[in-house]
Image 1 (cartoon, rainbow over the protein chains, first blue to last red):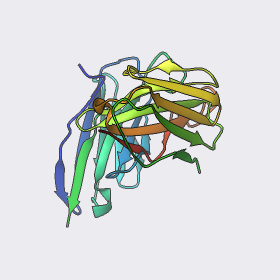
Image 2: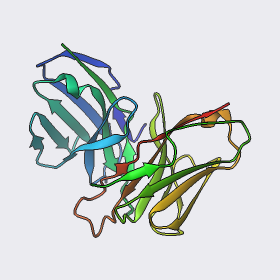
Image 3: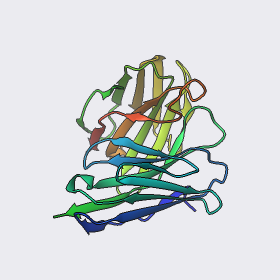
Length: 112
Length: 117
């Protein structure tokens, strides 16, 4: 089983749509969770951290379910500029060196 | 703003050549990482370093070595390049988790696309 699993998509949605991505992780001891965004032929960049209580940043909402080892990202009112690959990321428990494990990413295309 | 730079955006090398990929960060981060990214496989950790002269193997270290002589610089070395090392190579850095308020957030360089012929 992969440490971090995501549906690779691609998701093709019209502008204004709401889209949700899911991610599962295998290490129940993981403590930190993130969503990164990667534009085509660019480097990954942090989109948002994911907290136990859930958190929101504008049109983006992240949720964590520790019991099910499940993370989600919801994008409301999709924009053309949201087209990118979204990477689910968890920390590698047991080290303080900041080692992270990346999912293979979910591709989103928002069309007019 | 954190800045991570990589020495080349594109490289073409021949099988058997020794290849050096350099990464420099300007935020005094303790941790530095080298990944490769391939379609369908995502980012895979090759090596990381948590201090000068310290290095740890990641998930796929075979065929690679690293060097960290200065805190700001982390080099990836392909001792004898092979065609299966054709990939996108990404360097990242992050601050020490214990002393940083940003946790394990990693900051990436722009990547080097390496083609081995």
